[in-house]
Length: 258
Image 1: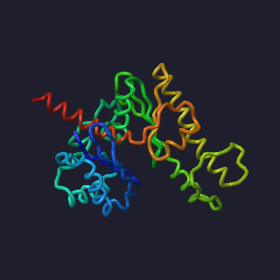
Image 2 (image 1 turned 90 degrees about the vertical axis):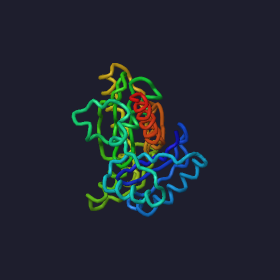
Image 3 (image 1 turned 90 degrees about the horizontal axis):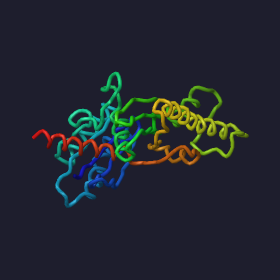
Image 4 (image 1 turned 180 degrees about the vertical axis):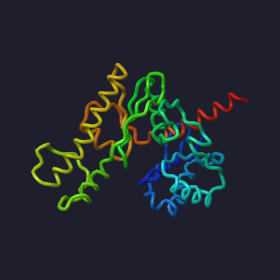
């Protein structure tokens, strides 16, 4: 089963070819530019799947206005239907929260992919525009989690909300004893993210009665994982894997109803 998977976020649109369970040809675009750039990106990704039949296009989105623009752009280069996870395609795992419709489909598909690989309690931290940490039970149920500002939003807000603090690039600090303002901000952002991860996952572990396998994904995952031994895995393409899993489960369920 071959698909073009598209993940539409607040600041970035990512797409890739999924050939079976393999993720190929990842493309990442600024969401603001997606309307003009996603069409050519789809054509490049599609080339990786030839000569297979026309693949499905499967979308996971937390940004409805951008999703409309992306779907319109995709329609200009291919005539295949575009399927949305959480709409035409069911979420790939039970969601045990108060209002399942309010949970970002990207969080659920990533959690489902992690659970499929681990097979037990898992915590999935996505470090992108937001820092989200989601928990999955032993039984494979999405239990919710926490949402915090991401590192780059934090850096930007700190700069915008103060008179003298610069907006700094992210970096791993050499020491908590920063000796200049730039180093101090970088250390603060880095340790804040790591401290949040440790605190939340420790509390999840208390609830589970065991330490969950901790998976990091998202643009800043490698940076944070480099300093914290309690991180078990870094999987950059976890959302694509989850989108692919959602379609596979959907097709299996449809076949079972026939």
